[in-house]
Length: 90
Image (cartoon, rainbow, N blue to C red; front, side, top):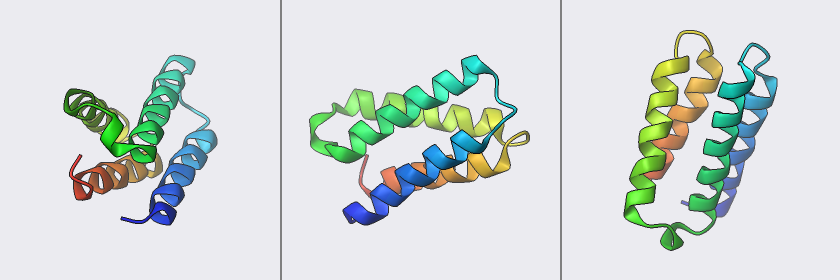
């Protein structure tokens, strides 16, 4: 997976999150932290432990399940992020 694809995914995730107006402040902060964690993993995949990888993936999947009905655009991007991480072996 090249850096351009990863960068586009991060920008798409952040843009979708920025455009989601009906998310509570608490949920927004949790998703922003998840986005930051994803950026760290994608920027240096070897620097993050396997346990932390699994934690991030678990949180991402939980967010997809939670927002699937109310924010389909956001969940589509998060699902794409999950696939990208899986393709990277994370």
